[in-house]
Amino acid sequence: MKAVPLHRRTLLAGLGGLALSGCATRPLIESPPFTPLRIAPLRMEIERLTKITVCTRPFRAAGPRLDVETIGDKRVVHNYGHGGSGWSLAWGSSAIAAKKALDGGARDIAVIGCGALGLTSALTLQRAGARVTIYAKERAPQTRSARATGTWSPDSRIADAAKVSPDFPALWEEMARISYATYQTYLGMPGEPVAWTDRYNLWDSPIPNPLPERAAQDVHFAEYARRLDDIVPRYRDLPAGAHPFPVARVRHGTSMQFNVAELSHLLTTDFLTEGGVITPMEFHTPADLARLPHRVIVNCTGYGARALFKDETITPVRGQIAWLAPQSEARYGLRYRGVSVLSRPDGIVVQKLGLSDMWGYGADDETPDRTEAETAIATIAPLFARASA
Image (tube, rainbow, N blue to C red):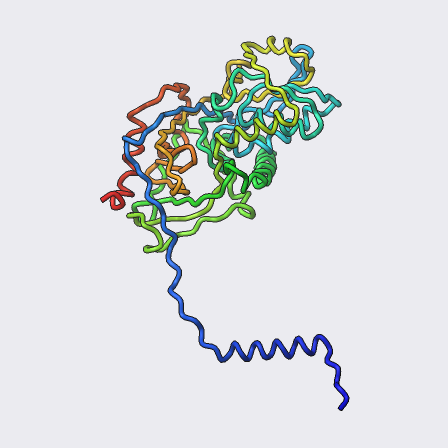
């Protein structure tokens, strides 16, 4: 008998039919339903308080300063005044500043300041082929950037919506998108300099109480987060039983987190490994820039620019963090009754936010307030009372 050849597709189709018929006769295996992810309780105990830090954020009503100024024979590119968005906007803002610094062909460039903006400016310039030296009085962890909350907050006190230029919202979006994309390249690295973590916003009533009306003298802080809706994960309401919090309403989302100690260390190491130099130096007036051999300087002095460049457009915004001992099993953050909590590898960050962004506005006192710290911790503690009962 002559064999009839089977074409490959005919054979595969036949085998597929046998597989399907076999599956059709098998009963589905019953399995228990998925259960909500367990949320490790935070130990909100005063006895676990390890330190209190205070950071002065540099707010400018018009937004960050990114212009170019000639001082003596120096060409100074400014890159400061990011409010509470320094880490979040650092890469995007530094990309803009670096481009301006490189205009004209200079390839030997100085950066003053060694915080979030200084490090990212230096690395951006370095990776564009420039020889870069950072001059700074302080390095991490002494900089104000090292005292930041460590969360993605690209429009936190970034500007006064009533006083920005018409093109600023688009400029902000450009900075935010560049930074967002760059930080994705730091995910999954040893030490987790950048990570995604769960966040929970909590309210005592199903319908949150409206915020108090803005007083005439209050700043109309710009809000641009909706411009990033296509890339940033969204929040959703959780039904009762899907979370352990004893409140009426919970919204859950995922947000980017900066583990500032590890991130600062990594950026510093990368800069030095790639040939950069960090030189200790303190500047008191713009005339001190004449000491530098570089013709082009990128100014990343943050709140320090207020005194150094006599920039009265900078308004201080005080922010205090109460640090509790780390809990590696708790990888999330929450907000409740005007207090923010974020679990980081170096500690639990507990911060009073107040009822509006005017909290801390105009205050330049960096003295730790123990009462404020204890009040913030006591506000959050009842959420986890059942866990310790």
